[in-house]
Amino acid sequence: MSDMSSASDETAFEQVNLNPLTPLNRYKFLTASVVPRPIALVSTIGPTGLVNVAPFSQFIILSATPPILGIVSGQYSDGIKDTHAHILRTQQFVINVVDEDLAQATQACAFPFRSDQSEAEIVGLDTLDCTTIDGRRLAASPMSFECRLQRTERFGETATLIAGEVVAVHARTGLVSGHRVDHRKLKPLGRIAGRSYCRTREVVEMPDGLDDPYRQYGRELRS
Image (cartoon, rainbow, N blue to C red; front, side, top):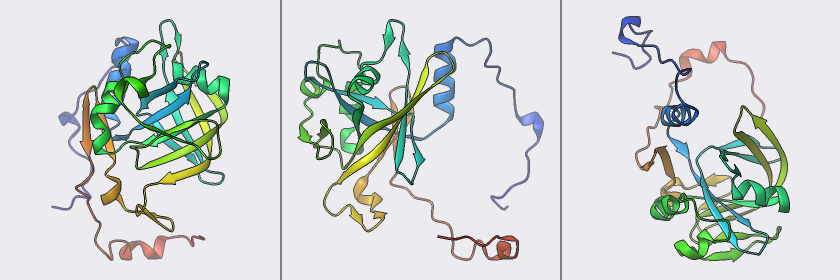
């Protein structure tokens, strides 16, 4: 049987009604359904100079030219997250890619520390100077993106998309060649839901010639 299967029997499905769910349970359902998601540790500088580090698994590429990455910040009952507040104040932040070795530190940084505490210090994450912005990047991250705030956009009642233009990239030696990234060395961690994560070691490669039957229907693409 081909894996390009036709529509399944509709009786094998049930409709999920999101309306009666609480906002928190609706969030949990959606983030558990849209998986796996890349996860990043975002580092910012607080008003007293402390390094704040927080995980974000709603993390996306918004533009390649110029290079713009986005994170989605939720909101606590008593206001916006520290990361969000720091970005609004400083207009800059660092998106640090999370690899398998950073899994436990990432979960630890999800704890709701007080605003006057530094996750980097408590969890034991060493930081390095940035080269373009006044920030700190994580020494243990295989790849870090220095970003300047480009814009924010509010969605719904609690979510804010924070878009940052990438002004510098740091990659561990041997990880990048030209525009190619060696994912066997990157070992990115994926987010499932709750305290569950996944590895990306098993890659599904598509066979050569898969597109051949469709070439007569294709449009001319320019690089």
